[in-house]
Length: 153
Image (cartoon, helix red, strand yellow):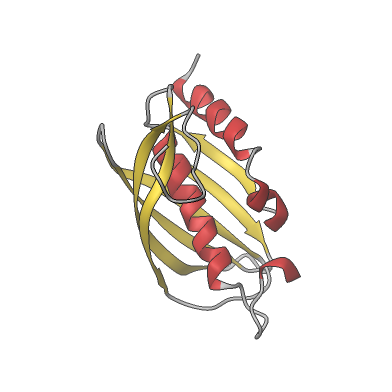
């Protein structure tokens, strides 16, 4: 199997379990080793009080693109979890859709560092930079469960 095909399948299977991404209407566009691209169409579900894309939706989109780029580089026995990310919002937009392209900067055994660029695609085809993000991920066992009271499992 082609590594790009294996990456697509792995990411798609995980992506389909993402309730927030389904709720927001995010689409998986591509996944290959070290890269993931997702799209978020403009809708009332993703706006802030002034009608533009909400920063939380932009951050979630960047996080998912970077996270899935990282997953393509993690061992098959592992999932990934975001430890931190830092995002810069460069411009506000409404209408059209956002595209986030996540790329692996460095894939280590214990941490994976990614970046993501978020672009706005206007209805007339114009493309503008919206945000940039840097992220740290940690590989976790597929059997890991989050303990809601904050103690180690």
